[in-house]
Picture 1: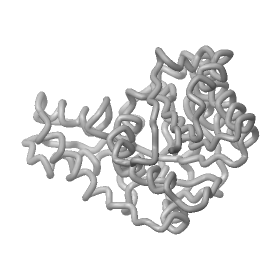
Picture 2: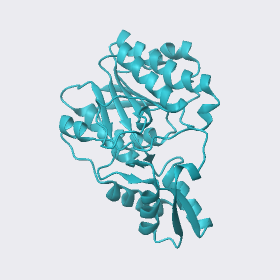
Picture 3: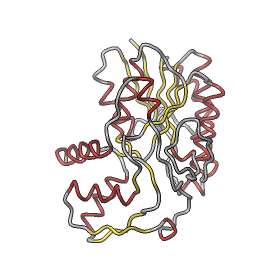
Picture 4: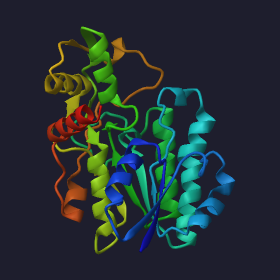
Length: 288
């Protein structure tokens, strides 16, 4: 029986992991939130983890308020960087496997081709910098960790772009959505399923992996249009530029992740973003 600690228990990915991993008889899982595992209190994290004696830690918890992070530099650095460093140290000291969830925001968005794991990182906002420092700390203190970079995560749990769009489409007849930022959505349930496959693999394969749903890169405008078309909402969606939608934090213009490495390494196929979006919207409709 493997003991697994999952941080960020109320987040989208941890919520999906709870559903996926409870089906596995060989895993005993402990889901820790802010109350049980306060990331800002870095000095106690080793002691808290010691109470659970995990074999594996899946570190999904993070400070993810991208715009707010520009004003809260100490908080975002402590939670995303220094706490990750402490977790990585614990893993090496106690021979614990680590899966660290990272982000496409470690890139600057200047690439014109899908991003492989060996493309140079260069974050352009405080959140991206903090996650990048977290990656560096994990690689240094837990060199046998798995780092999973993902993008545009959504789920039936928590707050995300899909649910925001659905809410706005109920309220408005016309929406403006950015049409010059490119990426790929990730259905958190698919990512949770991929993590389950990694956990059950015959061999632990450390390194950096990218995971997003399969397909050509799309813009936020394309994503919003697909949500409207699938749900048959009567709303007009107008494309706008990043410059027209001013926000405190810079966003990468292009962060389409190439996920071929994780598929080849662990021998599974990632669903298309269209198929997964339809699946999530159907689930949302049946549970509401």
